[in-house]
Length: 420
Image 1 (cartoon, rainbow, N blue to C red):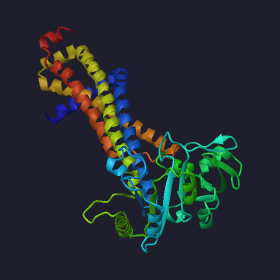
Image 2: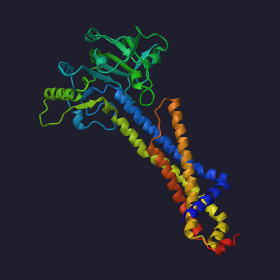
Image 3: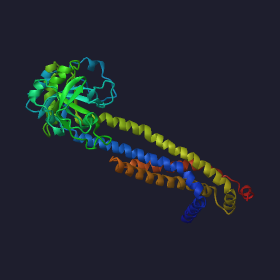
Image 4: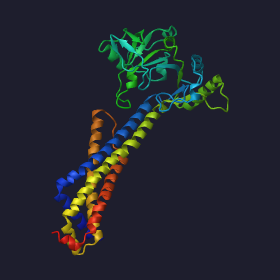
């Protein structure tokens, strides 16, 4: 096909779309919605991944957690039989690690509650009000040297208080607001699982830079002395050891602590570790796995909605062929070949869906901007979402327009002109 014929074909396509503006607009609705959803889903998934990376980078990248089980925090996998049978870490293990020269700071940690949703939730009350899903951590007084513990009011507990098994607590900002409202909680009593604790510190308010816009974990955390947690929760046998390494020496510290723990646990030189070694960024691997899984599920669904819009495109194109039968007959009588007619209708369908794809991408960009502005979420439409949305819209036009275009090209010129 020469250049002039291409120009004539595009002119015919443009004239057809312009002469049926309402019908073209209605036809594009499904394509626009489908493409916008693809762009928005891509923006949300990209924003989640970016936010997880930001939180991971800020969550003490030099910290190593040594645990009984292979992974720390929430997991989609249940502990294996071998992991359940492993020996728990003890306070003596933590003390031995703390005596090493290479770590910058060491603290054992007992956990009451869950990092995620759980049926086994501690009960924290004061003034007839109850905190939502609190997480109790029993730690040493140097825990703020292991990870960042941003205090807004008061102080952290001392070594003397820890050794005396004092009933003191540093509570999260969210818990403070839930049970004390506007009352200053310092010096007030709070009940943790029925035991009275005196509030000596309050954590700072979340910065809004958590995975989904808030640091909910920090907001609901309560720190108590390690020995106090042993006294009140003797049933919690598992202890993890949090170790902070100096900058640039994470691998060295990991190896030294691992060697010490292997020796204390009697692990042979050819045997694998019978404990988990987790760096802080590994805690977020599960979240990334979930995000990737959502992408695999949601993006095809969004693309499927786009192809549903293609059914409407095919229907409109069939009607268009019927309405323009006489026009097709005249063109064929004047010498237009079948491939010219086929190309014209294919281009019309592709142009329709392509325009819809571009509008849908623009709508997706606006929605992503709205999400980013309203809830301070780093939603940005990635190139793959733009390419996938536009590519799918063009493919829809090609598939949906092929049969009507083929029907138009096969019309008999004489029979077609009789329908004038």
